[in-house]
Amino acid sequence: MNKLVLFLLSTVLSTAAIAAGNERIVKTEVFPQTKGMVVAAEGDLEPRSIGSYSLRLYAKKDPAYPYDNFITGVVRLRNGTIEGITFADLDHDGKPEIIVTIRYVGSGSFVTVDAFRFRNKSLQLLTSIAGMDAKKDAVKALKNKLNSRR
Image (tube, rainbow, N blue to C red; front, side, top):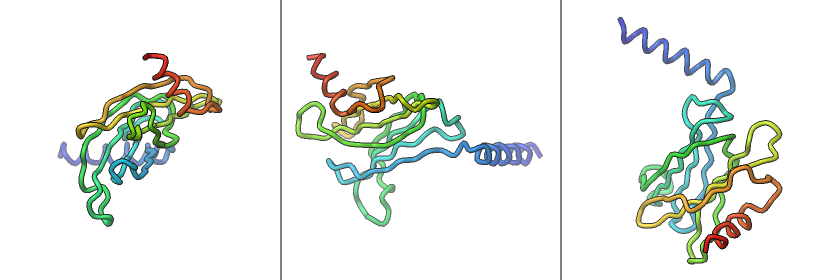
């Protein structure tokens, strides 16, 4: 009986979250370095404006099943909604970094950009800029931040 009640409660809460417009945002792109898939996804059942996001990388194997071969992933705090994934060689090593852009809720005039490096089958945060003017060039700003640390 308790399992049935928990199941029904879980179903109602999930349905209520979807009905309230809390569908999770998921963005995908092909990673130029490996030709595998990069996925950035907001956390399940979290508010659209805050919470977490996961960044996952999958190896290229069978094009019919692009998400079957998980390599690595990370979970980060999120203030806003995931806007997109881009790639740029920020540290001038000939390999692209993964850049996740998160747009603040409200005016939408500010973003957070997180840059990740993929090395030795793992993702690591290279640098991040929070509260950046959304009109600015994220790649240029990230490169400037990295160069100022050297």
